[in-house]
Length: 351
Ligand SMILES: [Zn+2]
Image (tube, rainbow, N blue to C red):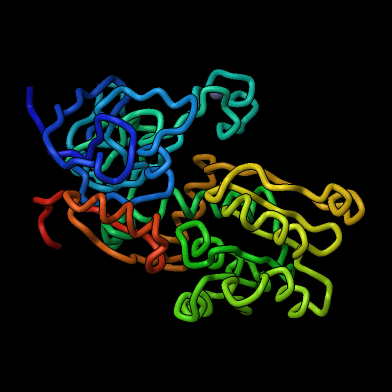
């Protein structure tokens, strides 16, 4: 059986379970495509999957990786959208197409919703086999780092702001953790949509970066509670929308940062899922708490078009060989630097 090099782990645990070694090259099913991976990108999801979460039952060894891009090597007999040689990026979300929510037009609500890299083997390897439905074409002028870094965080931030929070030009939007993956995508999308953008980060260097990509006001959350800062900057009013992927640590301050009638959109809970909630504040101020996850294929197309034409731009914090994948996880876990960590197969040709 032919083999490839892959980032993989045989059991859940700390970063030391990660190995870069041989793994069988997967077969190509009828509606699938095998891609020679040129680059992958690391997401917090990869860290959760590696540590293990309740209910996640993986076939070991598991290959992580929800973001990747490369060249089509082989297509199944049912695939007509792609042919060998095409440049593609992977969008991780899979749905069944048959359940009531899929049939009603929203595959992100699918009862069988799952993600490449989390529930099934991912793309941090020399090659990956994915359903053709999970691929988007990448224009020739887009480099592999950008193509690999954009899909997951930009579709997540796009759905949060454009679809779920339905932001209007002139509204005020607070983005927490503006130097992280989802954060830096949300700042750019909110700015592009004509919103007044407030951004938090943990250092002056990260705040300067946030200003450079479109934040109108920046707040160092290590120096002062960010809700106090928001109140001060908005003359006591608060903001219309808060983008929160932090979770328990930020939740109460996020609610206190909202203006009357404001919306808190959440796509994650990195610091924990069970904060205290002031219900009085929610009903009296008529707040909305809105969940969001990933994006539909149409949303992916919309946001990636803006990435491909340079309107939105993923920041690349580091490019590492896949044999250094553990270091890539560490950069995210320790919140070092800003933007996306990109992994390339060790034998990838330099472009
Ligand atoms: Zn479904």
